[in-house]
Image (tube, rainbow, N blue to C red):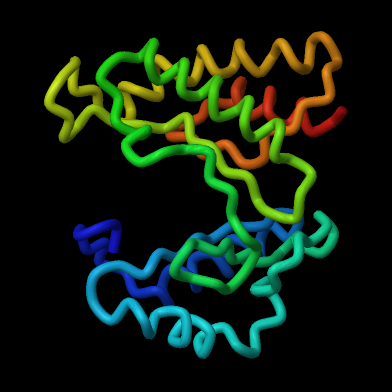
Length: 194
């Protein structure tokens, strides 16, 4: 489920897809944040725990793995109602994904990345979003996630480049994005080189 929308996939199917990816690309790691929603919420953590109990390629510890420990693994991230995995520091507030004006979204991203920079280095995963949608909002231009990404991603690329060009040591945690292109991906990778 994504909120109330059925995705026509079971959790086991999702895990199988991720495992197939990781078996091909052993240097990668995949982060999963499960959010119990709607029916049977109180049993989700136990059910997931049973599905992954003997899997050595799944990380459910609350301590932060090194990249060497994370490679090739599914890494669970805690949500307030799901306590398997690494604790999450989420910089976004409720409704920050709603985009009515691109400039407002840019300002929110700067605010969240500034917060993330201050929170980095703790034992939690820090998560910010550059993604968003105007679908379902009452004001603005009603941009789809793809339209938001077409405007935000080039801007975000330029914003992040300032940290690599002046050799500033920057830590932003995880930046969730929609439709990132190769330039933006390379910029993020270069930030990790410092």
